[in-house]
Length: 306
Image (cartoon, rainbow, N blue to C red; front, side):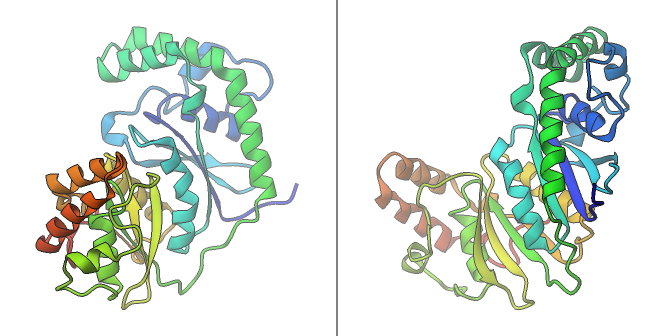
C-alpha cells in the first residue's frame, strides 16, 4: 500500500478511556483485528480506563500506524457527536494537516456505560474496570469493523500537507454560533463597526435564527489575513474551545490560530430570545440584538483563549 503522510486520525468517545482507546489499539496493531483478545489484554492498554475529567478535550497521541499516520484519542465529554465531524473542516481552516475524526460512542453497550461510571465517576475502580473490560470485549467485533472502515478511508484520502505561510484562523465560540460569536466574528473582519446597533446586528447573516449546532460559519478575514469563523458549540463552549486549541497544538498551528470563547456575552435575554426563535417566534431575535448591541463583552479583544 502507498505510504501516506500528514494524516491525523482521531478516535473520540465520551471519556477517551474505553471505546476510543480500544479502537486506536486495534488500528495500531496492539490488539488483533481477527478474533477477540483476552479481556486482560484490553484492560492492560496504557490508556484504558485511566482518563480523568481533567483530560476531557485533550488529544492524546497513541502512536503512528504503518502508513505514517498519527493516531490520537479524544475524550469529547458531553459535546455532541457532530462536533467531532467539524474537526476536519477546522483543521483545513487552520492550514494544518488533513484530519480524519471518528466518534466511537455509538458502539458502546450498557456494561461499558455502567463500568465507566463506577470506575471513573464513583471511584470504584476494580468492579468498574472489570465490567467495562467485559463490555468492551463483547463490543470488540463492532470496533474492529469500524477500524477497518477508518483504515480504508485513510488509504483513500489524499492528505493535504500543512500550508507554509498560511495566515491561520480565528474561531469565535458561543453556544449557538448566531449571537455573540457571530457579532465578534464580523467585528474582527471589520464588516461590523464598534458602534453598530440593533438594526446592523439583525442584518448579519443568520443572526438569531435557529440552525444546526454545532456549526462553523465563515465571516471573512481579519486585518492579518486570518479566516474568521463563528462557531456554534452547544452548551459546552469551554470544552469545545479546548478541543480546538488542542487541534491547533497537534497541527503545529498554535501561533497562527486564536480560539475565543465569548459565550459569557450571551446574556439571559439572548438565551430567552433563542428559545423563542426555535419555537416559532423569530421576531424575538430583536431582544438578542438589543442586548448584544449594548454589551461590550462581544467586542474585540473580547473573549479568551482556551
